[in-house]
Figure (cartoon, one colour):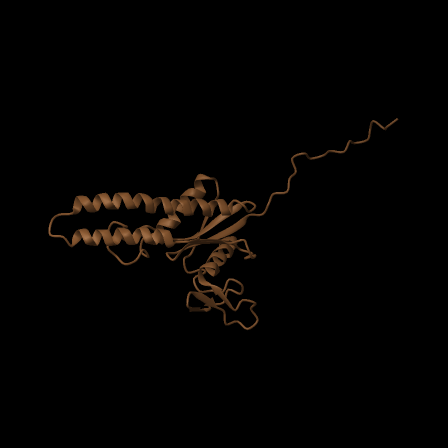
Length: 212
């Protein structure tokens, strides 16, 4: 017969292992729209979204608008219609890239999306529709779309200073030099010699977010 005075073992059925957050840095650009990578930079954990299709659509908008502006009569209404049609396609590409980015981040435990501090204070796409480049508009639009998508799906967004990972080697954090779209690390003991700048930036952002 058991001793009634014995204290029964108490099992905490609510005790669980809380996963550590995974910080996923998101680098945005024009040639390569998005590179997303976690702080540990393991091979195969990064997402790369190229921007060829979006740039082709923008080039169509630019050339069409210029052609309309070269004629001798008012083409404002025509420009507006062309812009509206192509903007719908461009916007879809931007938000599709943002959705893929957040879905990639959600593959990791307790994801946190890390972005730089940016704003949409620059020229609008309408103002730049005859320009040669997307640089003043597209990166900011991508960042805003990623942030909106992340928040909509419950993924926290962490913001870090824009200069945090610009040209610093993601492995040793020392400033490197930029050479043909890559960061070249000059630290002798560092295992990194040369790494694509956008991937370096994504990993650097993830690490900055982790320590922010």
